[in-house]
Image 1 (tube, rainbow, N blue to C red):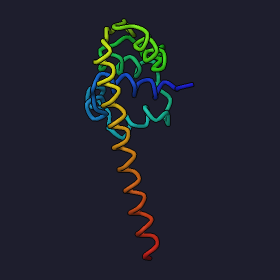
Image 2 (image 1 turned 180 degrees about the vertical axis):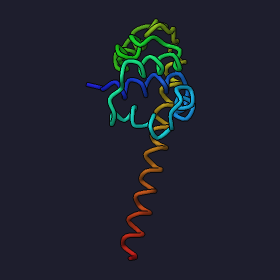
Image 3 (image 1 turned 90 degrees about the horizontal axis):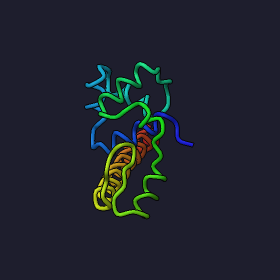
Image 4 (image 1 turned 30 degrees about the vertical axis):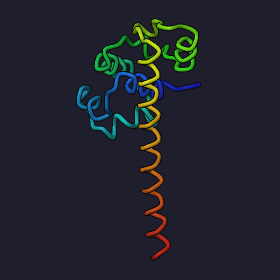
Length: 124
């Protein structure tokens, strides 16, 4: 089961927004905002309201967000309303592709960073 931080992240990615943009909109650091998406910190309702406003969605849309259901609806329908937004197949697939490409890129950067740390520790 996905936590609220993961749901916030999915909605943010579907809205094509960066963590930096979100952090600026809700007056916090990018690192602090990242901790929300990672589920490292609890999110008070007041902060969730700020996040929802920055994402231009309702709090309920975040809380009830279900990526698997959205994808299944898309596979079964040509266009559907999900969390208040109408997506066509191409729109969803394009957004999902960008989201997964972004994840792959982030993971590759982390792998590169860890390789560099490992190299440094082995040369000491």
